[in-house]
Amino acid sequence: MGRFFFITLAKWILTGGIIGLIIGSATAFLLTVNDHLGNTREQHSWLILLLPLAGLLLGYLYMRLGPGDGYNLYKGNNLVIEGVHGKTKVLRRLGPLVYIGTFLTVLFGGSTGREGAAIQMGGSAAETVIGFLKVNPADRKILLRSGISAGFGAAFGTPIAGAVFGMEMTDIGKLKYEALFPCLTASFIGHYITEKAWGVEHESFVIQAVPELSLITFLKVILLTILFSLLGMVYCQLRHAIHRISEKYTKKNHMIRAFTGGIIIVLLTFSLGTYDYNGRGLDMLEASFNSEVPPFAFLAKLVFTAVTLGTGFVGGEAIPLFFMGATLGNALYPFFDLPLSFLAGLGLISAFCAGANTPVAAFLLSIEMFGGEGIEYFFVASMTAFIFSGHHGLWPSQKIHRPKSRLFGLPEGETIENVEKNKLKR
Image: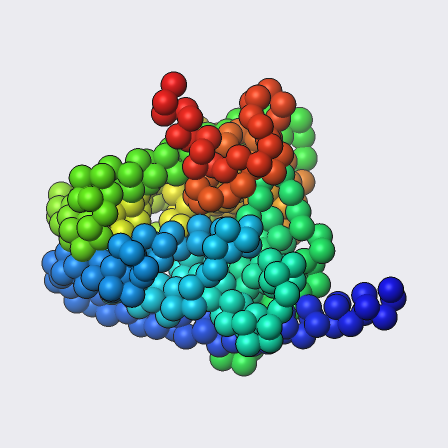
């Protein structure tokens, strides 16, 4: 029994390490190219006019390379989650295709992030390694989680949060502790390869001041977190609604969907007269920690991202949620007697947690991003955001292993998608 345990553990760690090596290099490539393409778009603002054509190409690639109408590939992170649950197989071409799609989206001005591409490449690479090593079905579910961990940890330079994210992302109310060792191995090696071997630098968010511990401040943090949770919930609902409506009226013709979405983004861009909400928006995100930004920036980013990803462009949703939360925190600065950078950080973590439904990973993310500043407040914020966001989220395939509270009256084992469908029928 003991010998079998150590052999299995060694196999998990070795396989997680291989996955981390692959994803570390792949994520370094993703981040480097995204930075270059983002800079290119900023220097040549006319590229936004080509976004509808980029949508046509992207839709064609997904329909051409995906089974059926390409819908399985368009599931993106949901396909990886379903792979972990044993409902489907993660297509190996998902990773390379989402990289191409993310590059097109960033270059031509769609509003997106990057962790979606890293996670999907993680799932794709893990599926490839699992197939090559002929891993059994039980271990397959565990090792797919390590692909998620490697992608997240390498994308943000947060290996501890990445390790837990891979364990927490697929099921609400459940942590797969069995996957700890391969997830931790994959996340740390992926991070090390990205940052140390390839020299990729991640964004820096500095909380310059933290309020002293007091009951009043904790109450303010809870109130603010509820507002940030509502923001994350509204984004998820709008993004899913646009996805459903665009598929319905185009009969799942993804070329028409993305072409139309590209036109809408172009019109929104010229209507506002600014390119601040195209691409990843990293400049304004970083600025929200130390200076005032437009008060409705969070709302503009919400609409731009929901339209971009809801109509078939690809990328990630963590950075847009970071942006929305941080800029809303910035906008609330005149109304709360709290430090600006603290409000921005609180919004960043809370909005992300509300969308991802990963409170432990969100809390660890705050520690790694902010160096442990305000740790007590961020713990309360992560738990509050998780509860008050309800059973909504970025990924419809996320399974509700346990409802967030008995007061919700939900059966165990439902998915976010089914819960939202049942609410629409009422």
